Amino acid sequence: MAALSHLRVVDLSKGAGYPGGYSSLIYAEMGAEVIKVEAPGRGDSIRANYSGTPGPAAAHVGLNHAKRSLTLDTRSSEGAELLMDLLATADVAIDTGRPGADVAPGVNYETVVARNPEIIWAQISGFGQDGPSAPRPGHDLTYLASSGLLASLAPEGGFLPDLMLSVPMAALVSAISVLAALEHRRETGKGARIDTAIEEAAMFPLFGAPGILSGNLFSIPMTPDRRTYDCADGKRISLAAAEPRTWGALCEGIGAPDLVDALHNPARLDEATERLETLFASQPAAHWVELLGPLGAALGPVNAGADIADDAHHRERRSTVELAGQTLPASPFRLYDAGGEALSPTQSIDPPELGADTEEILGGLGVSLERLASLREAGTI
Image 1: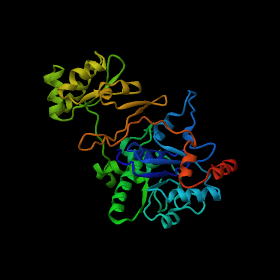
Image 2: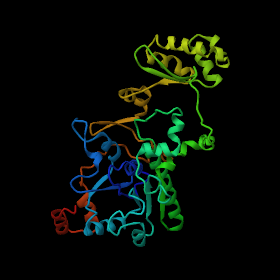
Image 3: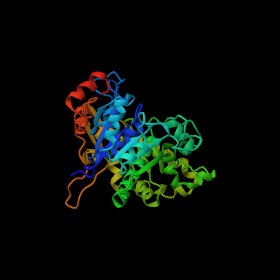
Image 4: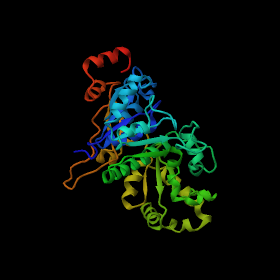
């Protein structure tokens, strides 16, 4: 049995739904029933495939597989009433709306908890539910910048990440908080409200370098033992031989014992870098990984695109999966009971078609077939 198969999670994400999508995916990966509430006729905007290739959008497949889809016009009074009925059955609700805004007319934490006092209400917003910045809009870059993480990643400026960083971290912070609140509920019988600020979640890596908050910018210099190198086949390898043991293993493996002391001599750093550049450029990346990796030289491939799925270690670990025509990361949540049985499900469940589970979910709330037909005709579902 999956670890969280007893939980019902309702994802109330609006717009593109990345914060809620990342967050609710965590519960889905561990077997919870995740109900994604979407607008009839259009759904989450990341369903759209703008690439011109057939099939659903890659981000939609990645973030929404193993979930259920309920279409509901929550702007209408009847839709709001049905949403309230649904939330009365939920263990967790994910609210990514503006601070202070109702998720539907008359539906908010206060009204829901009055009916379902055990619910865990997980709010995820850019800057938190209070404070002068709370009403401000933003995106991942906004939060990376104001949190201090962007300047820490690139002290000289000019760095714009191609992937979201703060949003997945906020999802993890929210999910960990929810799991703590569920344990609290188990002991007390009471639910909780969780206030996760994406900006504050982006500060989490700074715990490892707290001097940054005092204005002492932290940077790790690029030295011969810590950098990437180009190889003969156009691919790159990463070298992180920052300890005497790993640097020594590298020097021994390449037959250059005279370089062991080069790291302690500033006058020889350029020499060491140039020699390694020349050496690594003489053979394909796989040659160096196979030769030096087993020696403990802290050297590995710089994987990109198809390299990730083709990596021998990833194949052995099944770190990627094929789903709905997309190559996805496999679930990083690997839980096993004492007998070795998996407590997290496989990623074999496609993302739902828009509204695919509407009638079953609402039927479970006692909505009759006649009323379902009337709701569909009115555009409420």
